[in-house]
Amino acid sequence: MKKEISFVRLLSIIAILLLTVIMAVTSTFAWYPRTSSETDEMRIFRDRRSLTVVGHGKKEITTYIGANDNGHVTYDEVLSASNRVIPHNDENIYYFKTVITESGNGGAAPVSLYVDSIKASTATIQIGLTGPEKTYKAYPVASGYASDICIEDNIIVESNGSVEVYWFINYTGTTELQIGNFYYFYN
Image (cartoon, rainbow, N blue to C red; front, side):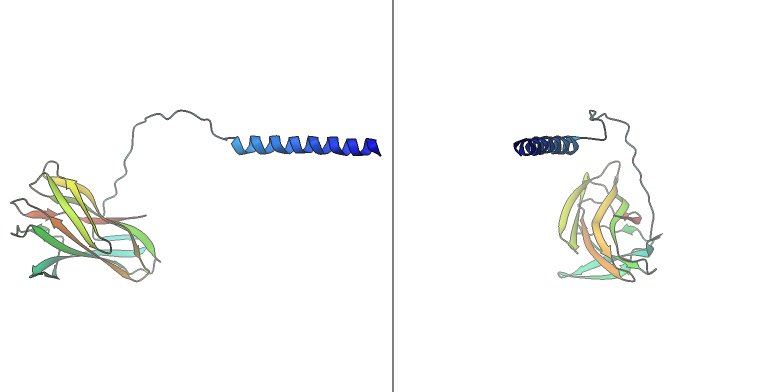
């Protein structure tokens, strides 16, 4: 009887040690070699599309120019492909409303709204967002253009729905402002 108890005890100790070794090895094992990071040539993908992009359904981007009347901004004029030059105003603030409409029953999708370029005569322009969130950011102007500007990111566009993005540009330059093409990326 005493031999049976010592054999069972020895077998349980071996099983516990084997289980401990297996747990320690498998939790620290890596399938990939641990090499130091190396700097390689970076490749940047830029996809520029304007006004209508087909992906998850059909989304159209329409931007309206706002006019400030004593603190009340109205958006009546559409910023069309042929009308991208905004004359200089004394207020130095230019208001816009961009509507992203999904009309192809493609389902809800998060997107980011971009403008490919803004022509300006200053070193920086400031873009503020008043809806759906509130942000304010400065963008550098190089060779007369600010490029690839993210107006808003992570906008959820519902199936057969639309989202309105209210934004403005604070521009202290003396020449007119020229807005480039709008495009978006799926997040």
